[in-house]
Length: 235
Image 1 (cartoon, rainbow, N blue to C red):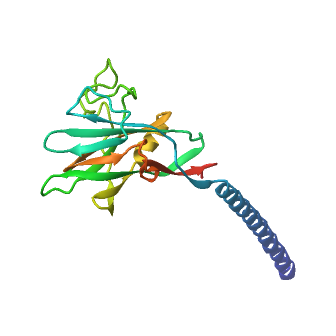
Image 2: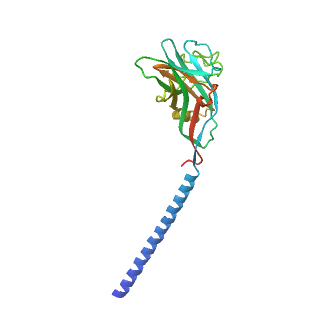
Image 3: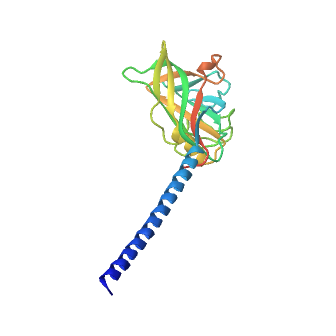
């Protein structure tokens, strides 16, 4: 083969190879563009909103009155003093859809410091409730009239979850605090377990608080559960 023909054939081969690479590269660009469009479409389909579920009930259970139900009280009591310990129970509705995801959840209550132990900074905690209790029958000793807690006061992990981090407390008046619990884990666990309600057990140490319940006349003091919810297709 003459040098000229060889050069021509080589040129054609190189040209063909370049065309193949250009075709493959073009296909990759199209695929990448389609992937970005699909991802953006999925991202847009998600919306984040703030929701406040309706409160269904609140009550407190008292070590001093272990067999009395306090559902109809306008106040709930949390913490301990030299004579007794009180814990509170709050219930909110769960109306989330199957494709909703809770990013963050906070429970806010308004409390008056009734008693503080000298040398201690009072702290409050929240836990989820595992046992099925009856609203108008639950007491320090029992979850209803016929069934006892595993330990009085829901002190067993058979009855409740572990305590979450201590609540944030902001002074908003003379001896009055806005108390905010991070209850994200509790809410997410209730959703995973397909619970129809969100149930919270509140406890404290180093002091005794009287807090506004659902029936308090000052509505701005009523307990609020606030959820940050992502709705739509998951990323």
